[in-house]
Length: 266
Image 1 (tube, rainbow, N blue to C red):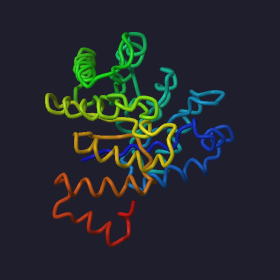
Image 2: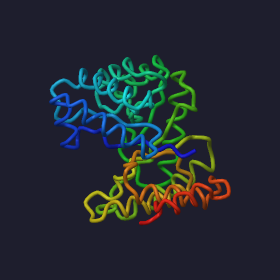
Image 3: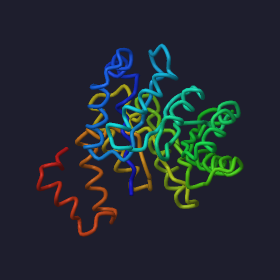
Image 4: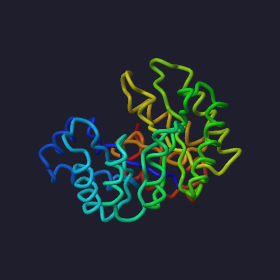
């Protein structure tokens, strides 16, 4: 099953930053409820931007969102290990930590928390050499990520590798390299793959169309999950259509249901 991770509760959005500052519980609950209703399996929560006390904000945010969604699992998203631990402490059930790289400093601060709280972990394909350029480099780094988490005593099943989606507005060949990397990693391992989908369209018009078409390509390559906007109707249409084409929708029943409800229009 493809995992939709809702991206909307992120303090880089001005509306979320304002809601965090004023502790506007109703606004946060509404954002959470809308994403759950749209079919999100997990919600990413980030309060790292423009907040005075990220640790307290994270603890408050996790409690509010899980209460509203009936305990929907969350992706705890922060560059701050203390904020991540605050979120993991407050979380009910199995959380996901977003994220670490293969660079030594951050991984050694975060992975003990992942193990302690039995969480999942997203590992970005970045090491001391920087960001990869090719599919081959991404494949090698994915294998290193799997070895890394296992060495910390974290099950491989709790790992999601992010092969780094980069904007085609500045790096037009990177979309193809990521797609090739997903195919390569899935053909040679059981590693689960996720990505920040909307990175692909940064700086371009009609971002939702680019995001949706890129998602279809990534699904065909073997993508397991993505951080995305579940309220985007184009995204939802692509997911329903792709499930039918890839044999994940028995007798195309969900596709037919969505068509009858008018939910397949791009």
